[in-house]
Amino acid sequence: MPKAPTPPASASPKGTTASKTSSDAGPKAAARNTDSASSRAPSGDDGDLALKQAAETGAMAAAMPFNANKPGEHGFEAGVDPQPGITIEAPSRLPPASTLSERQTNDKVGTQAPEGRNATIAPLDRVRVDSSGQMLTTNQGVRIADNQNSLKAGPRGPVLLEDFILREKITHFDHERIPERIVHARGSAAHGFFECYDAITDL
Image (tube, rainbow, N blue to C red; front, side):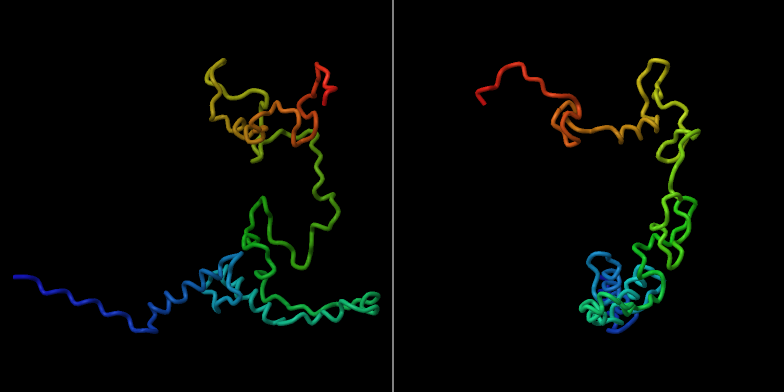
């Protein structure tokens, strides 16, 4: 006896949670784009920091629909006695942040930037380095015991790629296909000089 056909599943009525979730997924995903996002981010963040940043950035842009500071850019009086312009206060630190990774803190990157302070315009003493008496290290900060010899299989065996210091050095080598070329991007005579053995007066 043939089986009775299975009735088709009833479609979710319009406006239910399932259809609403699928319809919201597209705009929210588009709002996370950093280079092609919509000019109007959907409201609500649902704990999504990228979406929250887009929404708050949009709210700040909407709070200044036109440049009210434009009149202060022209005229003699504005030139000799410029006045502070109108600004919009950010609802959080997300909109003015260049990237969401600024929230990450560890021993290398430190903590978040002090609010309202630009440390890049301070004197350079904070980044000056005295390398006297310091150990040679790799790019990862691993101390180097010998930077003249590579790890080999035996006293005179082949070099092993397990030598991570050598692998790091290779990335710094000049990978030009013809390194003996004399006319070079780094300047004339970077690897030698031209020497003419015959007269070229006919040129």
